[in-house]
Image (cartoon, rainbow, N blue to C red; front, side):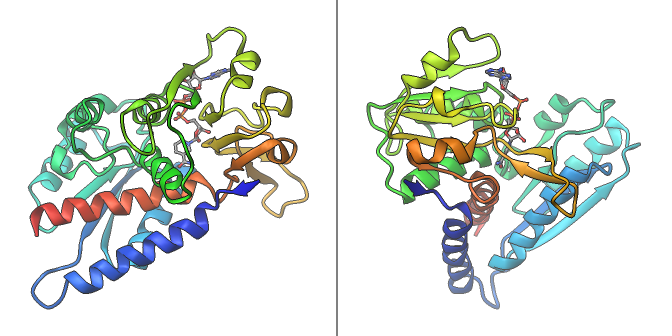
Length: 291
Ligand code: NAD
């Protein structure tokens, strides 16, 4: 079994990005600059944004954290988005989701300048991705593709079952895996909450990408020997033995599944760090489109 180590691979790719920054930027060219907009005080969002900012520092990017109170109005947030779009100093930015209930996420997403949309959620980028044109890819699917490529996982002609159809993970990774690319060229089935006979379907898969958000959903008896498993899920479960009272687990019952697999990502330390590394790559690309 190959452990698809997202921490190790991310460290390698981030050192490559840092080297590029060192070579390219000097006295005349400023470093790439990413901003993150954080609205409210959702602890998970705070942690994600903290990790993104830390990663920027690691590779020599400039980063700006813009914190706004949960009471921000739709028009105030849109005004901020317009300012970020206009800023010459900024290459890309993300608006950390979820946003408070009174904010229309769709309107916010549509207001983001596609050339700064390093999360790849704007329809311009998503549509370009669907058409196989160059675009900013959503960070989690992009991180998965980078991982498959770097570990030289063969995907061509394989049956890939994607569990989940969200706009940020399930749908885009299913699209990317089905494209005529390497990695890619897989035969993809998207499964979701209404899918019948899921265990049988999963047993027919040679690649499983699990993105449902249900702890330990994929059990050993749903997996055929030799399957490649990408576990996207990040779920908190109670754990009195842990000082925090909880621990993070994936959507796959890792301990009981791992020995049946050809390769598997751990949680934490699999797709999570690759997502942030993909965001750094997108920011680098946004920067290079300007300089
Ligand atoms: P989501 O809630 O938007 O979507 C979940 C999907 O799972 C839905 O499409 C739903 O149809 C499907 N689903 C729900 N129950 C099901 C069932 N019983 N059988 C089959 N399908 C079922 O979730 P999301 O935003 O795509 O995130 C999924 C998981 O991935 C979460 O745990 C989230 O925290 C994690 N995540 C991780 C990263 C990362 O960087 N590692 C990034 C994004 C999301």
